[in-house]
Length: 376
Image 1 (cartoon, rainbow, N blue to C red):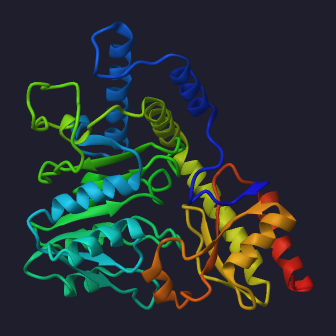
Image 2: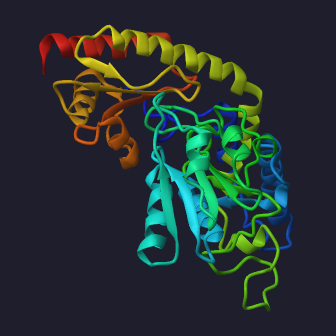
């Protein structure tokens, strides 16, 4: 099957990632829980992974790089910490439900409030619109690095420039990380939430939260850490403060190797993916009943709609008759679909990676042409 669902989970992993996971599964121990050699070796690998992530994203040190099971957990940690004393958050209509649902939960509990920045006429988020909606009690601004619906990338540096000094900037990096040269320090990010299993080439179950010195991130999960065992509270230092329970060591190994792979290949892969998305967009634009909602982008996302069919129906036909995997529906981003006027039928999302080929792109265009001709 041709796999164009990489925005949900990367379909092909580099050989270095597969080898690292295989080695971890053959023999591993619980890092940080014992003093024997194997446990210490695993702990060293975990710390190496922290350092690699912090270096790759130009973060704030390995101790402020904590592992999570996914980007959603990282976003929950960041959002609940930023609003632990109440206040207001500002987010955008581009955001995924992993941002919107924690904010809505806090609002329904009466513990915090939030506002949403709409799209500008160019289909993006403008810094001026963010500035206009800031309030005296705004504690955090939460913005995606790239829309999971269209691949559109807000200018995070410009948004940072309009924020008051005391307002935290939190980035959902699920779709951008591994595709874009994200720099926490240059962009002024206080938190970066990472999904390992997409552009970072790692396994499902590998996520991370990186955060600045001025962000006091609080735990939402409590339990064993292997440190300060006589203390019935969580250890007061990072990363232990935020990592209760046994870490997913094979997934962390995959994230380490995925980070090293991305460091070597990201620029070339990004250029390749941009060319592939441009080729797909050009091909789809030549089909009369198809409307494309994306521009060429290094994240590999191409969203489109068929004027006569539901997006789920199109995705089903592509899978069953042409053996092409795409995703149809609302993509867990309801406000973005409202902004695009696609809430009723959703969109078909083809999400490409550098492991895809021009031949595969052309096969999708051909399938859509056939669908146009035969009207399944």
